[in-house]
Length: 174
Image (tube, rainbow, N blue to C red; front, side):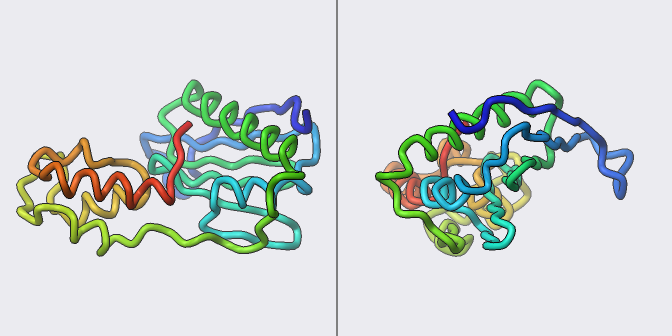
């Protein structure tokens, strides 16, 4: 096991002190820098920096950045959600590291879902049944991993299946 321990720091955004969400840093007791290219290969980062190795993922409407000695996560509801996501990424880091002999490390960002490709599969009625003002806003949330086909009530079965397939190549769950 590469990553064993961390200390969680929860804080409000300095530039938006009244925001309803919090952010967190997980300060890692172990250096996970060598595992980052393997983690990137497994989870597909939206950005990747080689030196020092850093990868950022988008999932469930969150940005998760893994540095060698720190994990940063934005837009969290509370400390419980922070712990849940940090524990998930800790498992992913350790699994990627344990399986590194079977994983081709990736030193660049992976392709990301395209909002217009998602929009093509939606009914484009702007019905607001999903809780969003337009299908474009909804498509953006799907691309970020915050919404899924099940959140669009008027989508037909065929396009729902296509959307799940399309998004399946990009996202993961925690």
